[in-house]
Amino acid sequence: MKMKTDFIEVVPDPELRKKEKQVTEVVRRFYPECGPVKLYRTSDGRVGFQMQLTLTAVNRKQVDKVYSAVMKCLGEKRGRPAGVETVQTKLLLPRPVYSALKKAAEESDETMSSVVTESLLAQFGKKQKTALPRKKPMAASEPSRMLLKASRANRMSK
Image 1 (cartoon, one colour):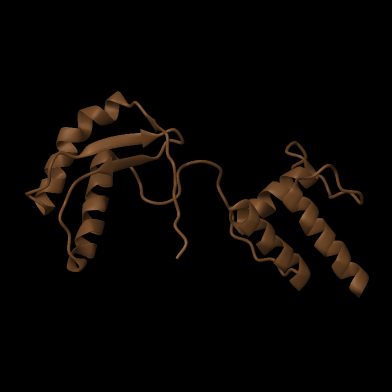
Image 2 (cartoon, helix red, strand yellow; image 1 turned 90 degrees about the vertical axis):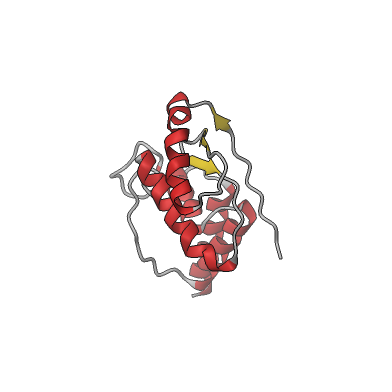
């Protein structure tokens, strides 16, 4: 089993400090024996909380309800943080390009979507939103180069 460790940078947030008492009351409706709840905000703007409970396997749904109640109390929404809107797309890629994309994503410890986004931004440039792609690629990142190489190899094999 591969262990995953995420490091977060917690930044001071006086607004969250003021809400800790209120959030503790919300959590105690579900778990009366719970100690004080600590709220924090990460450097990328996400909100989290820390609480100490004794749980059993049966309590999983209860924890989800607590999470929803805390986020509702804070006015936060579950899911993707606010930012650039994303659009779901479907791509039909040749097998070698897909394999190169998957390998690049695994090696860079990113999602395939983020590798494609990075590659396209490097390829077309951030300012050229409506321009057509050039015949000769601009300077690109390493994952972008791998995708281009796989694409060329696929064209040559036909």
